[in-house]
Length: 202
Image (cartoon, rainbow, N blue to C red; front, side, top):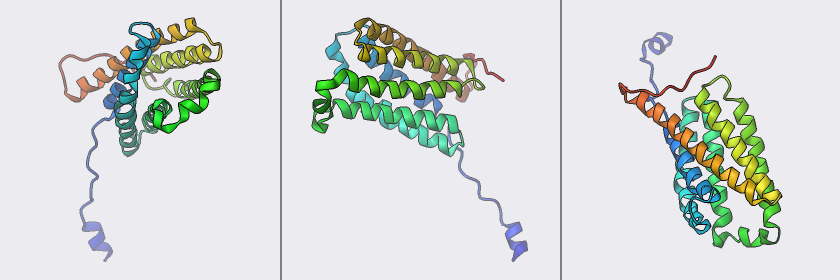
């Protein structure tokens, strides 16, 4: 019986493609759509479309990327993508009228959103620390995202329109760097002769 077990071929788990470019693209596009209105590039009313993007791309797609990172045994990627996917789903839930959340917090909306964003600022700061042995591209993404959340938090707790606008500019820059990092991963996967450096660390 032991010999049969030894002779039985190993069952190999199917390979899983790198989900990081998907997660980064979902994060980047949703962040761009929302923060570009804070920056004043588009009318504030245009941010309503962010609800749909937050639900399906920033939310569901990014959450799936996080689950696939678990499959690849990537704790950092799994934690980041799953958490930010849940962030976008929760943000959409706040804005969808049927949930009643926005109506309930309207009397204290700045304090409520400020505490909400403060929590995500703290979480992003923790994730930023986790990038120091990965690559400079991710250091830039999470460093900029930390500053984005920080200024948006100040904008709500202040409240301060100026802080909101700075947070918007930082958010757009965060999205651009995240898209860059995602493209770098796609180019590696396709063995493209043209590659983008991400500057690995340690």
